[in-house]
Length: 84
Image (cartoon, rainbow, N blue to C red; front, side, top):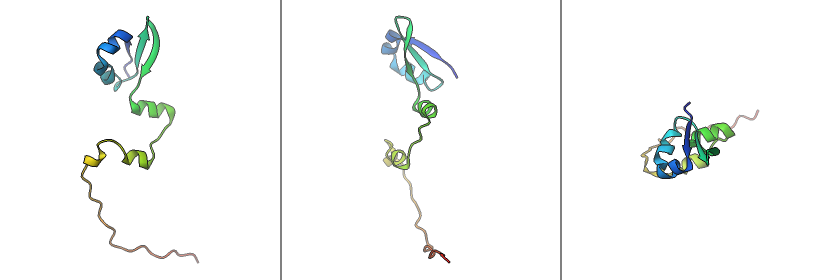
C-alpha cells in the first residue's frame, strides 16, 4: 500500500492524479500542512466499513446495461417439495 499526501492546492490542480493514486492506497489531502481529508477507492472504503453491495445495487451499476449476457432457460421443471 502506498500512501500519498497532497496539499489542497495540488489536489485541486490535478484531481486525476489523486484518483489514480487512490488505487494504490489512501491519499491524504492537507490544509495548511495538516491532514484534513482522505481519498480512498470505493473498494477500500467498503472493505474498511464492512459494507457489501446487495444484488439490487450490483445489478444497477452504471454501464451494466451495455454488457451482453444470455442466461439459458432451465429445461427441467422444479420438483415438488418432499415434505414427508
